[in-house]
Amino acid sequence: MDYSLKKEDRRLIAKCITGNQLAQYQLYSRYYKAMYSTIIRITPRTTDAEDVLQETFIKVFEKLTTFKGDSTLGAWIKRIAVNSALNHIRSKKNMSFSELEDYERIPWEPDDSDTLPLEMKTIHHEIKQLPEGCRVVFT
Image (tube, rainbow, N blue to C red; front, top):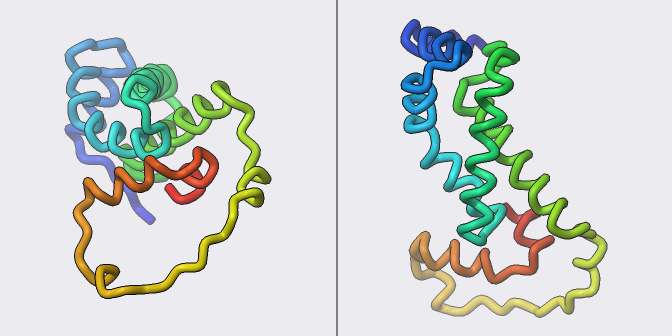
């Protein structure tokens, strides 16, 4: 697939590589909301998500010279964000997915309320209530 960058994106990347702080701020401003949204689903504590977001953009600026255009710039940054979030979780706790087998399986019976539309806020709240291993796999 051809992910040709626009001229303005190529210029922005080139300026970021030279250390231009205004260009780095513009790149950050363009992508931080989407990356925070991704990170907060994996690392639900706000303080941890903010740390991971900062770490993500530090890595982005350090490794921007390795961006080859094999994907969109946003997808490349998202991959760094997801990997940073997963690494953060691993560093906090040696997570074992085998622990998931210990959870009791509760039979599910559909009822009329299951057909009602749910708000995203409710869904995100329920996801945050899952055990860490389940939440990471689900996300």
